[in-house]
Picture 1 (spheres, rainbow, N blue to C red):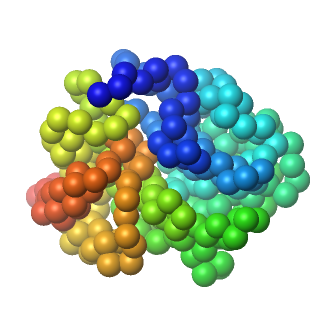
Picture 2 (cartoon, rainbow, N blue to C red; picture 1 turned 90 degrees about the horizontal axis):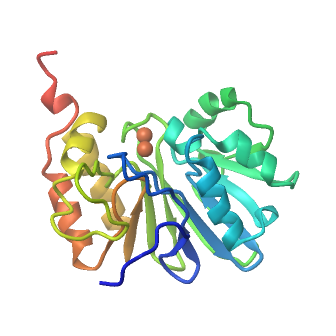
Length: 248
Ligand SMILES: [Fe+2]
Ligand SMILES: [Fe+2]
């Protein structure tokens, strides 16, 4: 396998780039992604304040920040949108939109964002880019946040899942899944996802709705090929959250 230089943005496809920070000391790696679509760019789960300098440098390596028209906040956590107010300051365009579910918007407005929001639940769970490219959203409440969504890029058949399919890598992390990629997903889903019933139903909805060529989670590793079905089956059978805490 080709060795990747995580100091640079990494191409996942010709139009999708990982722009995260490989923090070797952290078990929980954050994966912000940049989608380039002609002269328009979409920033997905832009990330945390501590990671901001590394992340923004990679974004600037790939595109003019002013080409970013939308920042998608797939849920409300600080590792997803802690840097959003600072990212906004770098992007000089008044028509920048923050894309999220209303349940997320209600909370992240408190981090002091100045851009207008684009509530996916008020827009048919869809965003159409200037080129005609369509991003579809699915509401995945309590996985793990009440306003969580996932994002599907119809053109590349890529599914951005935020915390779902996330992993805590105590050993070695790699951007693309290798080895036993299911094991590091266990502690993360057990601790953060609501229950097996809620998780497995949402996973089935994703499989029924979309043909998925890759999964790009906000933590852990990108899944492709046969690993996708393996991961779906594994998580659908995993007890988590309330399943494990009935006596608490
Ligand atoms: Fe989260
Ligand atoms: Fe997260």
